[in-house]
Image (cartoon, rainbow, N blue to C red; front, side, top):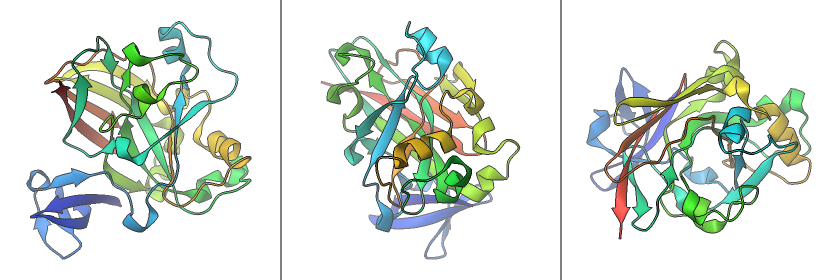
Length: 255
């Protein structure tokens, strides 16, 4: 099932997808463009921790002239970075290179500590699409992204749906065989598949929970393949993952 959080007439609603429309928790059926989309987080399980991966696809590491890492290059993000489907992400006026990153986002479903890979999927509530924008101008070190690169307000659209883990796992190849693609103003600019991750979802869950506890609602953003390009104000960016959703976002100029 596909779940969403939206605003309609000033009120917060949970919703599910029904025949291309939104079935609100109060029983109303509305068009998708009638609402303001929010990150598809469960209100009682807001992320305590948001973990993100750098260079988790070998082709992307090569694209940036880096050696593929031997262990995850992970960093922590704040919830204020998140924004919803069909919303705006601000591009500072003084930057020269701000690019999208289409990523499969894992939503943790129950408290996870010392989880083994073979059991990892039992701790996943679902999946969503993330677009974790990066501003290269502010980058100090690719191996340690600084706050201004990855923790800017509105820099991480997420959504539109939280898709139940069981639905994704039932697809051919499950979470680790999903096509990813990005279009900018309708032109295909990025294409990849989650099977090409260096560190897959079960491996990451085992790795992180070996030294920290993950709680329900926590997020793991799993990195992006190659094909990132600079985005300008007014550009409409769609990051799409097969079986999970298509997340649309527009770049806005920030003075």
